[in-house]
Each structure stands twice: as C-alpha cells, then as structure tokens.
Amino acid sequence: MTRFLLLLACIFLFIFSWPTIKEHVNINDFQKAIDSKISDLKNNKELQETIETGSEKIQQAWNQLTSRINEQQRNTESNQENKIDLKTPSNHLFSINNIELGDKEESITKHLGKAKRSSLNEYGENWNTYHDNYQHFFMVMYDKNHKVSGLYTNQNLIASTKGIKLGISKDKVRKNLGNPLTGIQKGFINYQFQKNSDFDVYLLDGVYVTIFYDKHEKNTVTAMQLIRQDIEQKKKDYYPAVSSALVNGFEYQLFDLTNSSRVMHHLPILTWDQHVRITARDHSLDMAKNQYFEHTNLKGQSPFDRMSQDHITFLMAGENIAYGQLSSIFAHEGLMNSLGHRENILQKGYKYLGVGVAFNEKSQPYYTENFYAK
Image 1: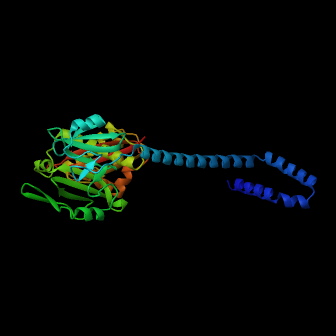
Image 2 (image 1 turned 120 degrees about the vertical axis):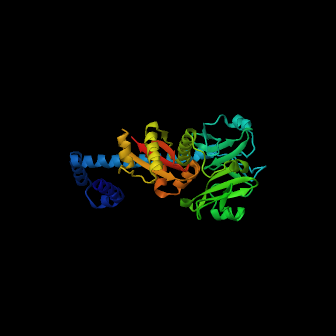
Image 3 (image 1 turned 120 degrees about the horizontal axis):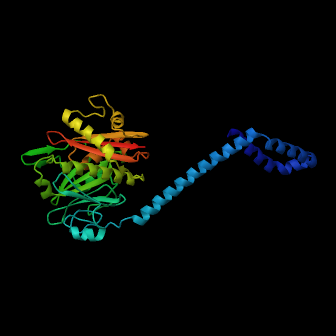
C-alpha cells in the first residue's frame, strides 16, 4: 500500500514538473528512458499485485463511506416522512401519540388498526402495543368501558401543556412539575422510592405520571408512563398477583421494549427466539427458587455454558438480568441505565432475543434476556 501511494506521488510530481523538464532535457532520450521504465513496471508482478491490493482497499473504503452516507440519508428521510405532528393535549396535562386518558378504544382502532400485541400487565389488564415495525412505538391500557386508562412510550410521542417532552432535562421537568413523590401508598403500607432513582413519579389531576430519565444522555427524558389513579389504587400490593399469563406478558413486553429502543438508536430489530427463551426462563426460575442474582449459576455455569447445554449455536452472545422491578417497563428502563446491559440492548451484531421471567415466593420478578447471533 505504501509503495502504491509513493508511486502516485511520483506521477503527480512528474506532471507538475513537466514544463521545467522539457526545457532542460533531450526529449527523445527522455522518451526512450520513460518507455524503458514503463516496460519494466509492466513486467514487475510484485508492483502489479501492490497496485491491485491498494485499489481494492481504496474501493472497499469508498464503498463503506458511501454506504454510511446512504444509511444516514435514509434515516433522515424516514424521520422526516414519518414524523408525527404532536398536538398539545386538550383534556389532560399529557398525551402520547395524540392519545389522552379517557379516549375511546374504538377511535384508536379506527385510526391505527388493531394492536400488534395484547399481553397481561401488573394491573391485571392488558398492554396493547402499537407500532410500525417498532417505529412510533407506544402501549395503551383500556378499562372495562373500553376507554384509555394507561399509556406508555419511549419514543418521541410525548406532548404536554407543561412543556414536557422527550429529551428535556430532569431539572426542567422538576422546575415545571415541582418535586416528585417520595413513595406510593398501598393500603396501610407506604412504599418508598429509592433516592437518586432514574425516574420521577407525580400524582397530577388523578393520574400517576412516571417520567424516566436516561443518565447516559445527560439525565434527559427517555420515556413516560401514565396510569389513572383508580387503576393504580386497585392494585392493592406493590407487586402483582402471579400467573402464567403475567409471565408471558412480562416476557413479550420486555422484548418489544428492547426493539423499540433499538429502533430509536437506528439499529435493526431482533427476532424472537423460542429456543433461547427457555434458556432465559430456566435461569430466572433458578435464581427465584434459590434466592441468588448472578449471571453464573450455582453450578458455576455461565450464560454461554447454559446456551451451549441447550444446543444453541452462536457466534456472539450476551445476557442481561434484572431483579425486583415491578414491571418490564421499569426493568427495561433500569437496564438501559446500566452500561453493560445497555451495550447488550444496543449491540448491532445481535440477531435473536429470548426473554424469561420468573417470580419468587414474595411475587418479586426475575428477568433474564439472552441475546445471540448465529
């Protein structure tokens, strides 16, 4: 490669020096010398191989550069074409994708079609997931009267009469909304939130508003959950009643949340893998039963050992685990604020994901995510 660049430099030097050379040399003799050198170069196989190798490397670099430029252009065009015109909510402080609490399911279905997925959540109701290949991702909970009783998004779909939107700072949120709650009352028990947590909870106009922050993006708003007060209070305990339907719900919700975050970072979506889901669930069950929280199990097996034992072939793989978060939403937002787990979620090379959830005797959930590529 160095010889090739040196040769190019000599050619350019010769071209620019040609007028001076003509005045001081015999053109015929010079031409004969040039012809001789050209003949030598043509017969120099080592030089020809160097030139070919150099040309290939330059072509590869050029292809990579143009590919990146085209990808950035497609992302920009896609964002411009698909940008939602967010309107200030008219009946409440907040809206998500121009939907407010109390809106009718019928009008949402008419506008957006059927939900992509409907799965049980911690409130004993379903999160109904809407998105276009995980673009414009949000979830809606309906009450028994088919009206919106809960909303969530981790994309740019938040609008507010208070100026709250995706990407603004925690300081600005607290300046506009005041001090957040320090805990939440459930019956006679007051469940305290951890100090310096990565989310704030407010009770505003009969709505529990949870605002999540991304500490890797300067503590800016990264997601929002809205739950009607009566729905929250109906859930008497902090942790939900356990069922197989809730296990499935938490697993699929965590999968969808992961893909939504990947799309926000311009990454390809992952494919659900039933095989590795079993590996993930077995590890969550083992942690819940034996009361430990580690990537390496009590037999000394790593995530890679367990995947290999389950006959999963992979070129690269990773594992995320979480414990104690009251829902997949809180688990996902927590994982995104943990650097190593965040790197797994946003790893470009992964192709498949399986999620496994299990609960211990106190109804506390354990979450395991297994990522891999073949």
